[in-house]
Image (cartoon, rainbow, N blue to C red; front, top):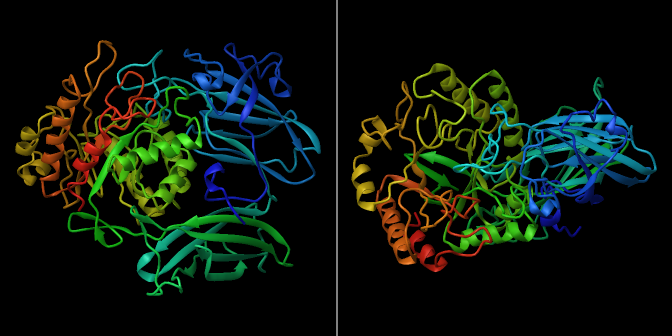
Length: 588
């Protein structure tokens, strides 16, 4: 089967028969919250048009209204045949309720995670009416990332994101089907470990009710095959990844400079041999580890040259305007000489993750923050974060998990036990599910337990940076206070020899007459001033031998934050080749 993966909303889990539902939907605001009482789920009494998946706050939605609306409704017709269907939502912010033909078929809470609903018992052949109600708020207890919690944007927080903001799509699939397959590369043992999960699995039988078949190929060449009975979910299956036509009969490693990917096909059968499901996927063979204060990729030292990316577009907010726009971003990052991206306070579109897998861009996956510390915020963040980890687990590009940033949502972590315990709990939950990737518990400062010591430092002058970081022990011991406000570790925690990465710095902005516009430190007047400051601060970091990498702020201008290397239209503000030369001065 020839697959156009980058056009599919979920490129790592493709069934043959699917239909994109993006486009024109009916839409209504429900500011008085009367929709449930008046049973709008049976049909909206009045509506306007909206272009899904763009939220009403954006230009591409066709509405472009910036004020907050707590409840919104969507409606569209589905023309179906007698097949079984699954309805998929890649992202709805924040709480969604879904009806088909006036019957509620499911709910979901969490703005950054996907969900799927079976239509088998609710759909009819012919015309069906789909209605979605979405509640959102300015509550600091919900993971919101860079979305403002005030009326209007401010500082480095931006216009809100309400409702359907990622693709909606249908696929034909039976109720008993593959829900997911966890795929773990074991590079040292030349195998991929599969852990399949079934949707609506029959239980209570002592005999195998299902059989799973898996076929691995590389560049069209057969690599390995498995078929076996399926009794218990997530029973590990090992498959060989050595490519026989290779002169060394070896495993093809995934690397930024050579991002080789394997194809894999799954087929699920019942006990009589009838095919229940067929899914097409892919994986990359790579290993992330830490030894002697260094991050290793495939057992070799990795010097990380990352750029921070907010993932916003002027006309579409958090939603990418197109797949081509995603491809432009990945290519721009590589053109600038970076080998990775820290996707900041956002869970990005799956097609972006596929492009990073395919084109070879390392990704730090970061959870959008809450902004208070209480029981509700803890519950919301924990549940959604673990869904995010499961959602992105199979992507070889993802090499680091970042559940917290700059103590946001864990106020008082420097000396309070409860927020410290939350970060420890999230760390161990994440490592229990994924023991292979590093976890950064509080990116920037006031670390508790963390696999990498990351520091945010917007020092403007390279000379002052060099002086501050001359003695590693002073940096890690708490002798140095950064920005007169924070230390590397929270009280009661100490440096354990972790790799050290400057995971935010720079943020240089050109001078602007707009009072709201800003960047970090003093703004520069022209390109010459920019490149001089950019060069010297990078040189200071690159020459500090114990620092294992960096993340520059940032890729693009976003609304009033004008410290990007690109403008909002993705045009270079500074010469890309000059930036690339500076980045590539240190490769290891």
